[in-house]
Amino acid sequence: MTNALLLLSSPRGLQSHSSQIAKKILDDWNASHTNAKVVVRDVAADPLPHVGPEFIAAQALAPERRSPAQRRALETSDELINELAAADLLVLAVPMHNFSLPSSLKAWIDHVVRAGRTFAYSQDGPRGLLTGKKAIVVVARGGIYSEGPAKAFDFQESYLRSILAFIGIADVQVVRVEGVAMGPDAAKNAPKAAHQHAEELVREIA
Image 1 (tube, helix red, strand yellow):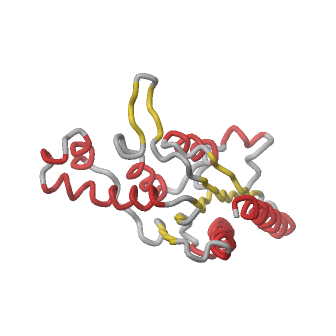
Image 2 (spheres, rainbow, N blue to C red):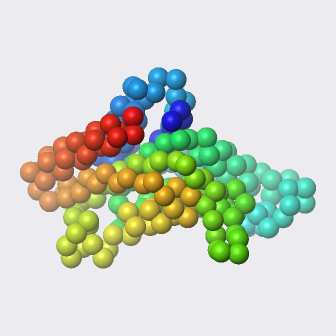
């Protein structure tokens, strides 16, 4: 692997657990890939525009039939898709917001999940086009959602796995930082366990 994309989405920046661990993953990976190109995109600090009518209309038209406004509407999407397509490794830092994702990350997803660019329709249904990539998703949440009674409320990890697989990224590993709001011991132990898991994953893909 030669290129990586780090996608940050926490409004807490590098004070967030997800961002700290995701950045450490990329730093450790980059230590053994010194010639790699690394792109960092923070959609919380630099929010993306939501898709609008011109974006929707442009997707249904051949490039030569798009108006100037429609072409401009796809420029951000093209840039984001090109970044993702060039990456061999995708690392996402994702805090849980209301059992799901930050809206800033959902805006990124809406730009990159695009017919003809990251998936295509076939007789057998939709087919992801971004195959051959690895992804590590760092999810952070105050409670325990990987098991127990709150598992049914986890629309964060399940959605991310599904949407990445939809565009062809099926090799997805998840690092969970959970329970950090469940007392001082949990706040200390959860990040430590997540860091250990992250280090194991990096050794596996090095």
